[in-house]
Image (cartoon, rainbow, N blue to C red; front, side, top):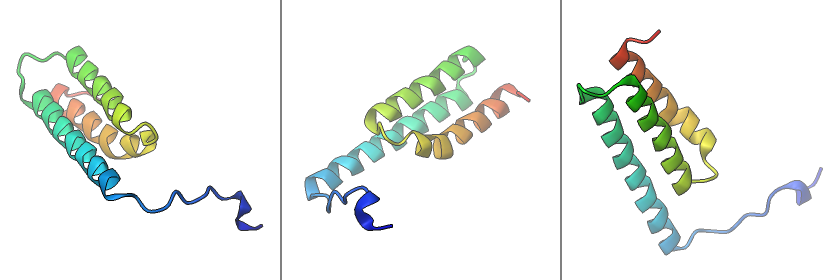
Length: 91
């Protein structure tokens, strides 16, 4: 079992790549904060609209970070589900 089965290391990121990734991460955080704020505070929001917001948030996150669906499912999905459960008293 040698190292030949491993994926090659892409090498260190350039400063520009790091800045771009940090910019996208910040954008994702802002988007998630806004969506969670709307879901928790908009009294006119229906459960269908809130669910659509959550689904669209995932699509936007995966558009920014296509290979990070597992990370999204581990970090953001439970937060959104918990918020929807609390907001609409779901079981």
